[in-house]
Amino acid sequence: DAAPRLDSAASSLGASEALKADAERFRQRREALGDAGAPVGPSPIKSVVNVLGTVLSVNFVVIFGLFLWFLSGVFSLYALDNDAVINAVKAAFDPFILPLLSTHMGLTFFSYGLEKTFGVDDPEDDGGFRL
Image (cartoon, rainbow, N blue to C red; front, side, top):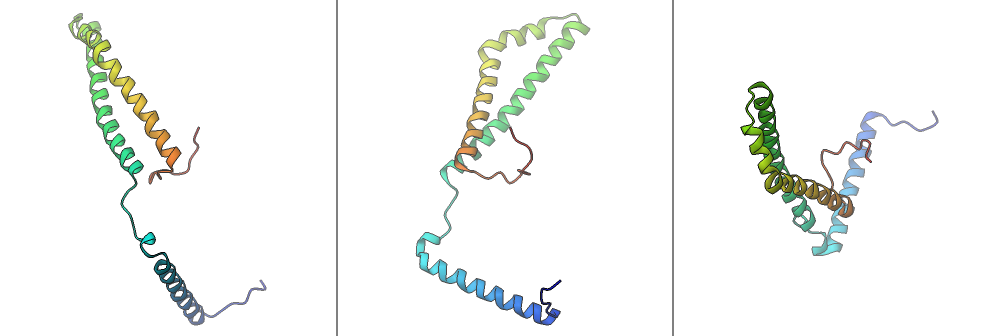
């Protein structure tokens, strides 16, 4: 290995000086930018995505409850030979359940599109495979 090696004391002194120089350059650049370098609040798009996330989370809980209602209707129909619960689910499907599912799917696609279009970072994104 042809690279020069520094002993640990000299290496930490060099790293300390480099860190101080970087901090000074950062300070100078920040002063040159003036107010343009000041931190700003969350972007409006990030706020919209956050609200959509909250709405979709609540919507998911409601949909899961409706799914449990459907399963109880199936159980009631086949195990108890009572079709009252499944008939109630069928009656609620067109006016309530179908629009809820459609809205949930539409908002999911809309939120995904906003995140990809405007580059809102997902802190839980592990960089895995995406379609």
